[in-house]
Length: 178
Image 1: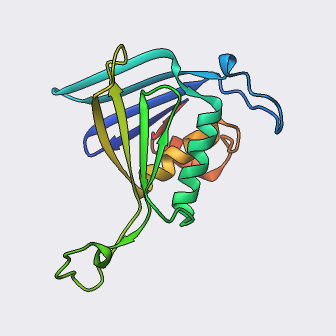
Image 2: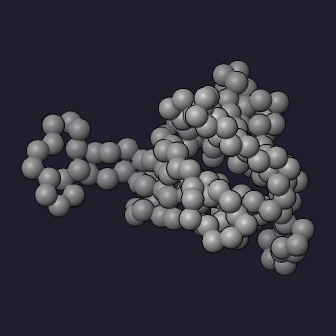
């Protein structure tokens, strides 16, 4: 199964295979915890970045950590900007909870009813992992796509099943491709 998001005309596809569920208290074998990952970021004609069959992008444990962080962001439990780093530098997430525009220094005017900025995330994809990582592509993710990413990670990790109504909705809308 593959996640497909349209992030302002950048089509992002992500497929994670080989997830391992470790029992609580069980020592994680990092050598065997890597998931096989395919991902692409495409916006013709200017962007066509694809990585296939990479088994060094994300650990099963990192899938769990990202799922939990996205869940906290969506439930309003995350109160400050949070960075999610991984063992390998391919992916990096910055999670931004709701915030009030009046809290920004120098704010002079905010239209009534528009004081609160909803949750968002930044997904950085580092390019050229053969040396020091300095180049990356960054995409913004907003509430509905954060929900879809969290649900996909829940499906990958076994927290959700194909019969879950949210997963059925994602399949119907072709956000999840089986």
